[in-house]
Amino acid sequence: MFGHCTCEHIKSGSTLNQSRVDTPGHPLAAPRTTDNKIGGDLLIDVGSGPTLYQVLSGCEVFSKVLLTDFLEVNRQELKKWLKGEGGSLDWTPYIQYVCKLEGRSPSEWKEKAARLREVVSDVLPIDVHRAQPMASDALPSEGADCLVSCFCLESVSPDLDTFTKALGHIGTLLRSEGHLLLIGALQESYYFGGPGVKIPVVPLNEAQVCAALQDYYCTITIPQCHWPLQPPSTFTHSPYSYWAMWVKCLA
Image (cartoon, rainbow, N blue to C red; front, side, top):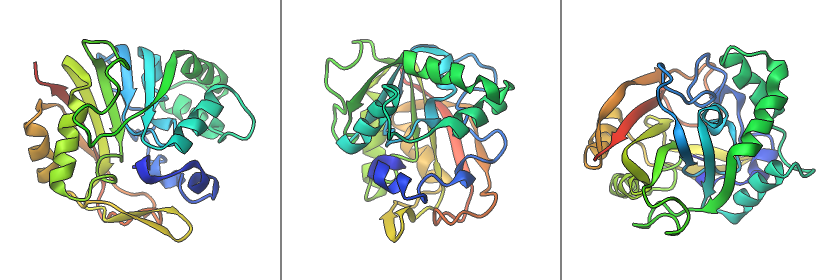
């Protein structure tokens, strides 16, 4: 969802609402399969925004991670944190929280932060509305082993047709039999990117998302999971729960 959101909005104190990740077992904090069988060489985060939480578990099971965003200001914010520069967003409490979800001591957050900095190989531009979303030399010819996309496509698409096409575009980044972890909010019509900054989102229901996936991906490999907003969020206008699904790219 952070494709339209900038680091300035997050620093205002309203964008990174803790209710987004405080539900126990929430996939945003620990995007991994229940059997831990998915891993490999390359993970691409599609539409990272200025945020890192969506790859805090993935960095442990992939040897390389690419972060991407359309906005230069977001890419620069990510690079500042990766280089350990002052003035970057403080991800310490979120890294500690993910350590706890993974059954580790929150005191191990420094090791996880070091691991993330080690495996993130680059922060690159992406445009999900282009048939070739990334530069042709940005990734191996065979594609990535896995994509994760959190709250991105629905917030940068004006309608269902554009959302569906964007799903197809990012699918070109995957290798044959690769996996996509797609996370979003059902029936969300807008969210707040900062004080008084209301950003529109195309509202989607579960049937529409599943239908959109059918053209480009195989059947869902792990059933959809739903998490109610606890407590009700002032961050988003989504009356329903989060959803997440693993889908496999067509051969």
